[in-house]
Length: 282
Image (cartoon, rainbow, N blue to C red; front, side):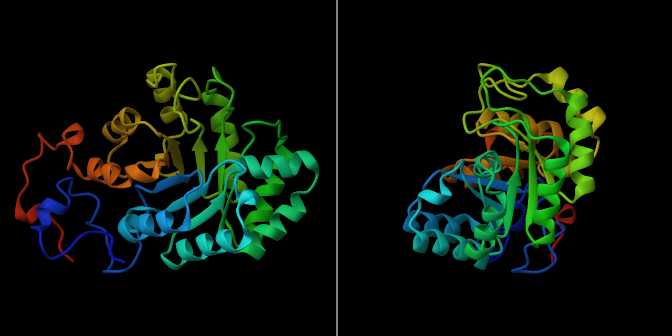
């Protein structure tokens, strides 16, 4: 599956940003190091799920089966969904709330065994609902890494009104990365409202955002949950098209990729003069 359309359209029209395609190694190779997109699946049936991946899979890097929904699926359906995503090079993981539940109930070993048996290739380690001490958090990350799983961690509480402490985030993120986490996700829930960086109207607390960037300058190791279009636009304009974004609704994958590329009014490259030489052809 190619990362960008080819054939019918002039290459400049495929990526006016000049950023999304220039480092593509070869057709069919998923090689993006930046601009990863995590889709939140809250219970798609297999046909809708397969249609999503067939049409937009080139622009999806992670699929998270939200919250604790994974045990609610018939096992055969769950395994089909996992296998289909993996066939397309997508990392598929259960929601972090499920691992939190396993820790709370004392069955985390069973959780990891089942994750591997079902074929998941990623997990999310979070403490949005429970309190997770540093020793346990590190152990969970290392366990996932040792099992060959892609480990994303999440920082922040899910309770409405919860805000980000940039200094605590910085310490937590560094320790998560040291333990082997691939990305650290900043919590925003599926609503994007009144939690984490975002206020009751979904707007970003710019002071907190700037402090996070100052304390954690390597933004390529952070995934920002941004389910709302306004949040996606803000982050793309602030950090560029290769910002990692999560909790994207399945129906918004193409719209987000269009914004990343400057193919939507919100991020139209007015200041950029495009020339043939600006576009890196493979």
